[in-house]
Image 1 (cartoon, rainbow, N blue to C red):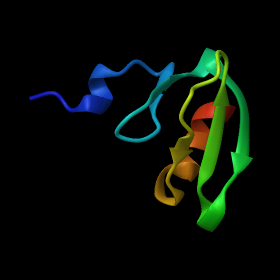
Image 2 (image 1 turned 180 degrees about the vertical axis):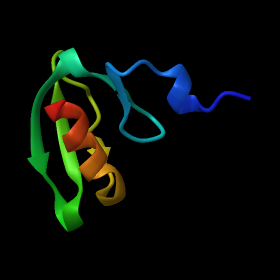
Image 3 (image 1 turned 135 degrees about the horizontal axis):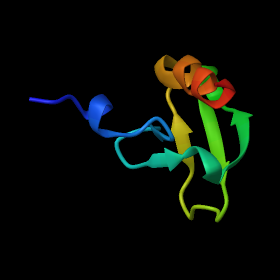
Amino acid sequence: MESIKKRIPEQFFRANRQFIINIDAVNRVNNWFNGKLVVKTKPESEEKIIVSRERARFFRNWLDR
């Protein structure tokens, strides 16, 4: 069985269980409590998109590629 990472193209990132983000939609990234990140998108989400401390490093690497 294929893992979820293999099925999601590189232009997308699973921020948490609720959100999968397209790299073109990222408007801004802010630091949050305890090493977490809050992602602002365009169009803006009604809910906060929070990336966990454990996934924050992977998220930043994904943005910088």
